Length: 226
Image (cartoon, rainbow, N blue to C red; front, side, top):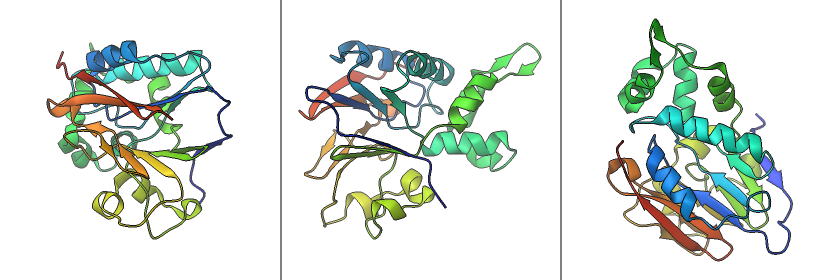
């Protein structure tokens, strides 16, 4: 099975890469964080690591913002797929409905309730279906959950990229590229020699976090539940 991902050339000298961890419907935290990032729009890369929806209050607004940014900067804004987008896809197909709802899907569906019932714009459905699983660029590999340390990068499977946890971030060996990931919440950004974990539990009352590469400078915004 060939996984849907993106591979880009080494960034031009002076180009920065920003990556943002799990948002989970925390729209105002996302807006605040974006205002803090010193992005040179159109030149620098902005990578989102998945889990834009569920649990938080404004999943719809988060998707609308990401779709807008992607339209304006199609080559430089790269949203990746998270396990919650995968679950939403399954829900839309009539599969794993209870699992989706149990994992915060009710909060997402509330955002799409209109007079006459549930109305999810086709643009949002297409956006989620087309999300790539990873971005490989220069010395970095961006992915939602991590990678299976027992397999090379070109042998990874979708399940690992979206769901893996301890066997990845507790791995005692060294990866060939620096892995930038989300999925597993940490009290603070996890920074190791070959991996950076950016999920700091915004939707649970923590922070929404971003990293600027190659400097590895960290930015935060506090969670706001409205």
